[in-house]
Image (cartoon, rainbow, N blue to C red; front, side, top):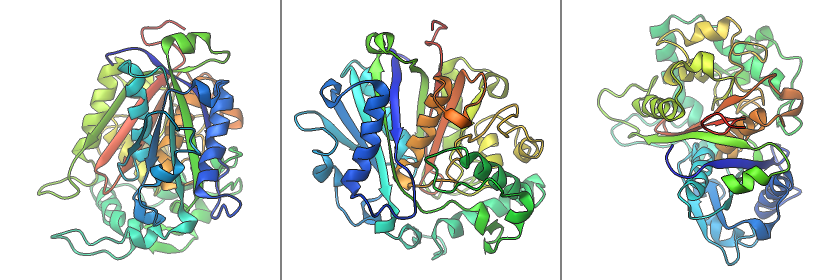
Length: 390
């Protein structure tokens, strides 16, 4: 990654729930921002610019929310910009904020992302009718279910793999005090007993609808060197995009995700992700996407990601712990879900993940995707400065 070094100085998030009726959208964002600034031991006066991420405006029916949120975000008199890349926007927002420090435009940048699904109906807002394609009318699950069926058919994965992922992530979520769903007694069998919603996706293999927000504070090398607490150094960032539909498109293993992963590993000098990355926060809104994205990211060979999951390698004590926070399956404020993955990666390598801390985590991936698997954003963070200096 060219340019100046950049580090995550602090992160904050809200408690996630189906309905946060105790706060407005502005209050929700401010809750996450205040925690991030406290974690970074900084104040609004120390922030040079603000970047806001948000999924489609139609989710809450508020056009251009960055206008009315400027005051709550402490952006008065400062540069404020909005990022939008559908469900991946939280990750893209963190990457854009990092680029402002990397490029020398600002020394300290606040990145914020949110979603208040209780004031919307994302299920039906996402029931789109794309041109030249059969309309689904069944939300995101209805859109992605055929992709999961295609993965099962061509990989030969057994039917219980999705339940293995769901049980693991929900139990991890029970260790996270901010998670929407905290279920420490869930099992593979209990997941398989839940209702089939979009064959082969069952109720317990599906993400919740959450209200929530996340914020991260990024700073330059001089600021990070003076930080009282260990920062998380950004080793690489990557974003790629492809159209939702085109002839020959592989919906199971999209080209844009593969290209972003290759760029990320190349920037960070990673040649074997499975052995060189200690923990991964991967955007898994439906449980079957864990093995699919393990392959897309290069952690597993094509059609073999499910074997990594079945072997227990992605468990909290496995070779590559995936989603120790509980992931999107435990909390899903769509606009913030990507940034939550990025923040968890930073928390892991700076030793701030509490009960879901992975022992010895020094290198971590944050991953997000959005739209019809057409936007991908990711970053790799580490305990050491790029180049090896702590």
